[in-house]
Image (cartoon, rainbow, N blue to C red; front, side, top):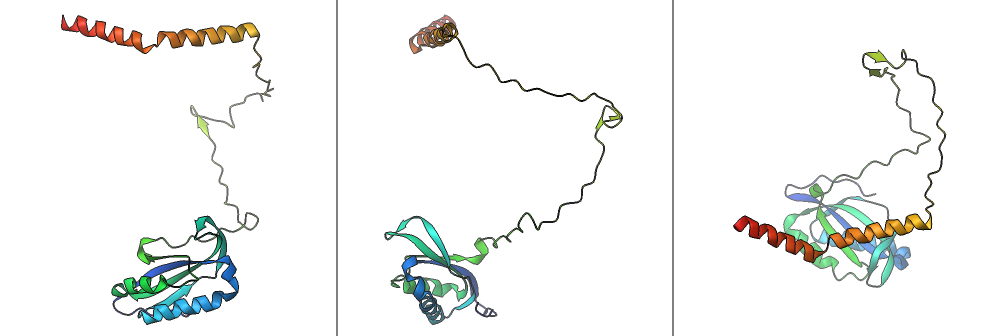
Length: 191
């Protein structure tokens, strides 16, 4: 992690995300130094830098399927952003990069605690009321429901009848008949 710096008057905070092929993992420190030099050359400074994260890419970039993501918060003047982008393009180790104004992206969410370490919320019981009577005062016998499987087995006769119904419905909705009916209705309205 790099020390936090106080921003200069005209500097804006940007987030620089760049992807390096997984094969370059051993030389990741030298790549970070190269990026840092480029940023300093553009009158910028790195505020924060994340640890490299290995990830499978959503789609291949320059025939690379796995990469290393590095996210950096950079303070730089707006007029030097195009210069920074132009300096990042020829770096052969970087297969893709993105420079985004930090104000446009939300802060990363805090990681939730595992379920075993979460504290349960205190439960406050309120009696549910129905028609001015509480459920506790209303006595109802417990109903035990026995689930029976639905009968979905049909006989061949029922299946044929079902198919015939579907066919007759389709025949009723033929386009030609609808056109004739519409024409008849329109003629009646015109007369």
